[in-house]
Amino acid sequence: RVLEFAFVIGTWSHFFIDTFSADGIPWLYPFSKKLYNYPLDHKKITISETGFLKHWTQFIKEYSQIFSFKAEIALIIIALISLIYG
Image 1 (cartoon, helix red, strand yellow):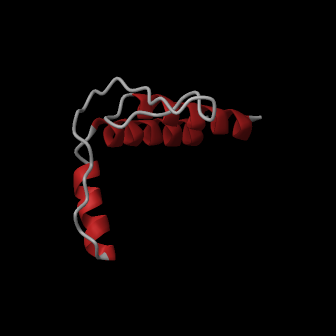
Image 2: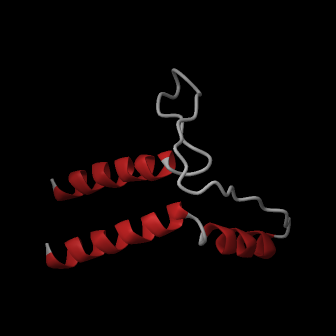
């Protein structure tokens, strides 16, 4: 039961965080491709590098500056504390 609950909470928290990203998320897909977003950060990640290592280095640098990253880190910490003390 705990794993099922963790899976559902993890999935819905991901949808919730993506709703507040600059790109948004299609909540009603496949019925509608409309993106729902209420961005807290208006910065979109744009990667210009084509080499594998340079691409991911640039991605990490840009992604670590936006709200989604910080929210995901907070949720991971909460999940780990819950797992340890739960």
